[in-house]
Length: 278
Image 1 (cartoon, helix red, strand yellow):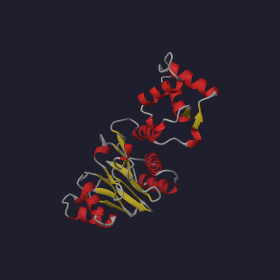
Image 2 (cartoon, one colour):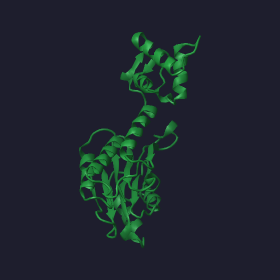
Image 3 (tube, rainbow, N blue to C red):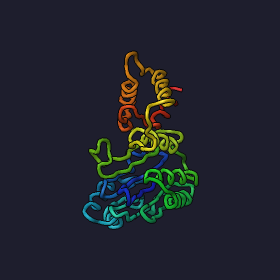
Image 4 (tube, rainbow, N blue to C red):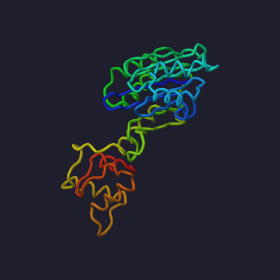
């Protein structure tokens, strides 16, 4: 019912999964990951115990292939299962039981495992693999591009309903308190991958640190533009400085990660302001 790709970025030390399915809330079932340990996608009559069990085994030092053998060997419904894994070193493994509905199968490569079932044909998995291997950018972006390419190549033969993206890295979560770097879900949507890509861009806007090259002084035309937008959006108040009005806006809209020193602004925030409410 699903196609997914599990991947690893050795430079950023990130592990992640992107998945799409004709299934409600696929993000609540398929993806499991832990920074420094690995990632797992369990699907096709998914045995959700595979996720935590495989992560535990890989944390104990098992490779993805070894963990895969252990989690599937005593499962009486093994022929109906499908699973992809990446271990701490980026080694991949994938499994498709002989009872999975056609088309079903998987492909592994350097730092990824792609798999799917009830697909139009094998081109979905091939497209995910080729796209992940040839695309540059962050792990999240490569996973999303691969997922999109899988859909363009045919995708789930029954259509689309939900999608999810999970990427973990050490202290990557909000405030640095956990490893949940990116955890986004589209539970029920006519175009779940496009919607997932849209909210990913919002995630980057809200939570990614500012690009220093996009931080400018609040002066001249930029000053006037910010003042105009803050007035339009109802944040400018009498006898209140522009800096305070901007600060009120940033804190109300949850742009704390984009807040700058006094008299400076992130142009990505200004671009968002100009689109807001129009």
